[in-house]
Length: 237
Ligand SMILES: [Zn+2]
Image (tube, rainbow, N blue to C red; front, side, top):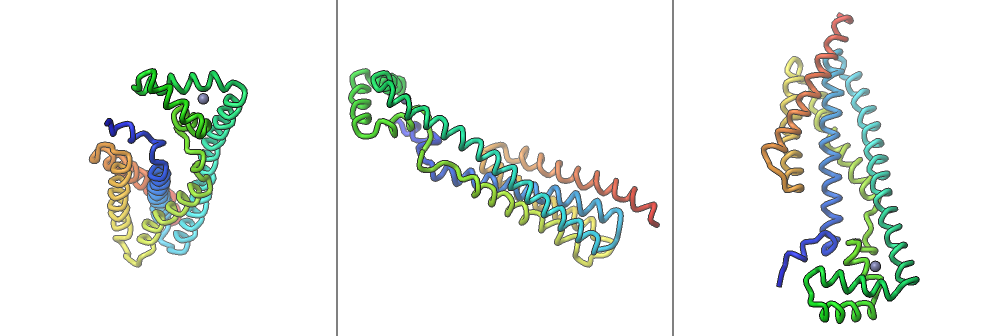
């Protein structure tokens, strides 16, 4: 028996929707760390006022979390609409041309490796039981009972954006005097190594490469905003 066929995304939709949720969470926290680190380090380059840094950080967190939620909601809703349209179309086809649909099912099982006679038996039995479920499973790879929830994805990404953003804002607010910026910089890099590690693990991609990519992105964001911030700050001295 070939267990490989069970690795297809639709075979385990619970694990699939969980990994979607995790992906949104890791991306959200990564965004929260990078964008708020860039923001607060930039403002800290211009002013020593903790109150101004705090106000900028809180405004940035609110704007970022809302924008993450809206973006994720739109993208998941679009995906969901596409899936619903496909399901509707399949239902219509089963109603209007059941014979053609049965033949289609037979050929799909043949393509999977069943003998023509076996494929016909399987197709007939599945059609008798639940034709719609059989077609949706093999043709569309969608579990109609488990369409991705747009609100869940939106919550996951905005909450994780918030959690990620706490790191740079929290550290930059500490009374560290002249080492505030270096300590913030290092904390952000450490946090990005962790999210880079998690996202590489989730996506099954090359570890050092993925970690390096997020770390360089975050470091560049902080260096650029800090440099610009100090340029603004000079005029106030
Ligand atoms: Zn069909």
